[in-house]
Amino acid sequence: MIEFHLDRGSGVATYLQLVHQVRQALRLGELRPGDQLPTAREVVERLAINPNTVLKAYRELEHEGLVEGRPGMGTFVRQGVAGPTLADHTRLRRGLEAWVREARAAGLDQEDLRALFSVVLADASKEGAA
Image (cartoon, rainbow, N blue to C red; front, top):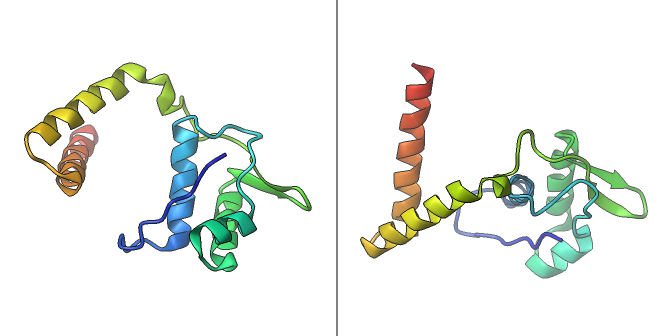
């Protein structure tokens, strides 16, 4: 079962953080169709957030067709994201892990890594569009 975490300083709405974490878990193969999400009550107790926030996230995921609520039972993963999961790309993951270790050894912190990755990703998108 997924365990949600919040970054209260990120500037990203709490419900969107929950939605993004479910999408990421689906991409990584950590969640699969049929898996149950934590109940709203469990998420509220663990993260000390408003129940409406959890319900809003679950409604968003339901609207996207990724989960379905079953009355009296909970919320279940309905389908994965399109394409192969990132777990299927072991070689690429290992390469990225090596890159992160090298960047850390060069003195880059988490924000530096995100910024560098974002720039490279944006440049690659531009090249793909050309």
